[in-house]
Length: 498
Image (tube, rainbow, N blue to C red; front, side, top):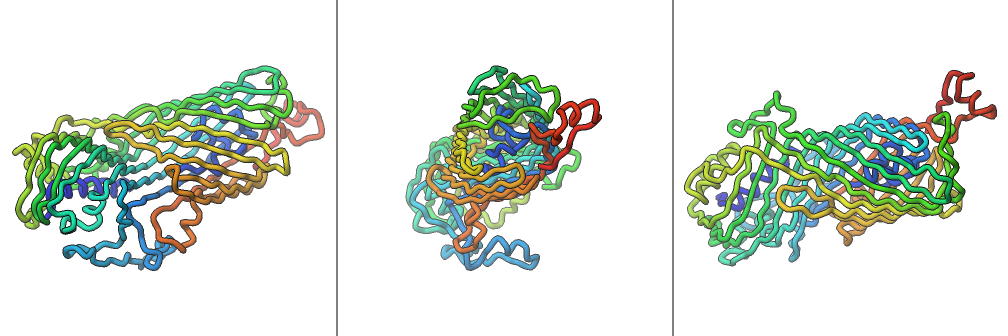
């Protein structure tokens, strides 16, 4: 039996399967290089590198307080075993089985997933100016305001009899998923003045290439499960949109349609720092002779991911504003593709399989975010303290949202070695302990490394890495004059791996 709400939710979950954090350790460092633009485009001028070439960087994050895998049945290392199979067990209601367990929370729950790959990218800084060209791929999924009753339906099915013949209200439930590519250009300008403080301003402009996406937005809905075969829905205000590189009638992959949407986005930010020494005039002749003046403290503010992707190919938007009752056993109905599922829901609400469609297009907004960074130099043995705030700005309808986080991260930092132990408060309430290390140009870390220990039930993870080639400022590496070391007499720069 798959009545209205169950079909709608299962449709969205199946779309997410087709699609598939924040790497604070590597993004807050003075040696982040081109990765620094991910948190604040103006931070390029705060870097101790003048050239940064990223070969590959990645960040994978998952967190949910809705379901979990038992620690005795699953560890992350099990995924390395090609013969591993998830242990399934009965739900206790009906005949269905599942591999996960439910937290059975009495509060609204959520699920957030993100994958970010930074491809070949480059940053170049020279006196007052800094530029970067970036490329990458992102996948993000959000499920927000999942009420306890809806969570029970997803976890136990419509046979969950404790909720039968009760009336439930759903408000502001949203589930959104999108995969897209980015090609970006960043620029930052630093004020050229001889002073003990410094200002820099920056922006990024990004071209977005949408691979696919989907969203389900339920503004409000009142429903009641009469039994495992009948559901009443009233005062429904819901919208669903989707665009995927598949044939909605056959589920075949459309190999000639690598992207189904396009859009634009921008980041903008500024950085202010109080310096330990007076900043000289920014008039270095050679890249390698640019001065490095350390700071007492630094504050940066940025607005990220202001933009959206409009999907106009292989896209549909449906509206369900009505009341309906679904009765009878539908186990004999074949629901083999997207159009059949949507058509069935439309017929139940409007009496026609095509009445629900309102547009052959769809738009999903990027996760607009306020990013605030504060960095303090203890001036003791290369130790720094960093505090960062990530606030996902709420948007209505089809829109991704970045999870809120507050992070405190002590770090030891030199040109060749760096260690950090960030403590983050996910959604401002769940503490996560992380670890980060950089040796030369390779860095690896996790903002939630305890998720890999296997001593607790699994409900999320975080891991990131980066591999770059960088050249540092004030490092022409010669006892001779800068002209001899870096200029015309030598005919070369002095290259160094950092």
